[in-house]
Length: 507
Image 1 (tube, rainbow, N blue to C red):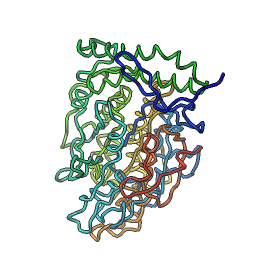
Image 2 (image 1 turned 60 degrees about the horizontal axis):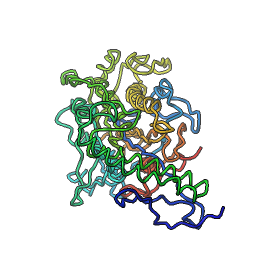
Image 3 (image 1 turned 30 degrees about the vertical axis):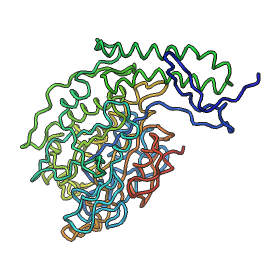
């Protein structure tokens, strides 16, 4: 059958002369190449307020000892194996944020701003300590939310499990992970939500999944009106399909199916969702109590509630971008409160202090951590990096918990994880300090942004997870850019940093 070329501006028209533009079809193109439409993609940044290794200890129990597929699971990464998500997560190591005034560099003071360039690609220093942290760019999550969150209830959601600094003074910037561009072009720091109960009310307080309960009569009337318009347009489908080749028939059918998803876009003004996997979660109740004297406010329980909320916010398409600080930078939360076996660790049992002067560390991983590994070759007086990675595993387990939930959640013909790109990052790495003279002059230490590492989970945009990729000396923002591109970002830079990590997309 001869097929007559079709104008690119062709419409399907329904009642009241309302028209819906057709997608780009092969019949409209000189070359038979077009991009296949995809469903919503989700983007997440998760943060641990700890470096990867201890002062004066060259050993590292976080970075896998071998590269490529089937990498050996380290102490800190054991939860990926335990929760059966190792094949869904890649590790990128060898990353480096230089110190100086150049593009994407950091100031000479490690706390509290050294990690910011990883999340916005912009230098945080203009040359004097007083101005450190003042030169910042828009955060990756904000760019994704602004670009792809149109029609969702929230452009981004930003959460924080650690509600108090626990050290002397307040957070003073240590609780910042996101940077928002204001209407006048200025950049401001985003304040994270620290109350799981408040987050639940904001997301789901008046939420009703479509078909899961009573809907406001005005909302229902609007739904009926829009359905009638769509139905009248879809009535002409068969006539149009007969004019198309098989590939265009498939493409148009998909497009018309997506038109049905317009009903879900009513979410922008009403608390409802048409996703079958979207279920209103149980009210978590009152927040766990803050305990400043114990320096532990049940951060694990708080974090898992936030993870549950992020999971369902993604499933219900309430947002497509999220950030989560499991712990804040320079974390002074008590590790002893995670498990009493940490009581033998000197330095106050704090993740930050353990990296500097841990002694008397337990020979076996405490039962409260997700790992239980005996290391007989590590002397009790010299286990700094090993103990640090027990805390790494505590963080990684909570990240793996979310990855596991998203992997088990249907999302169209795929899973929620298939349509997502999630990154887990750390405050620092394990290398030369390159800091101010006030920091001890160590050849290797915890106050370093050398040899940093990030985890990347999901398969959105062609991500091929399950590998350890060594990228010595590249900027960690390039990993962030890769995750952004996986969810549809068309740029090649973030702030002042250019480039991505191609290996994340290769088998």
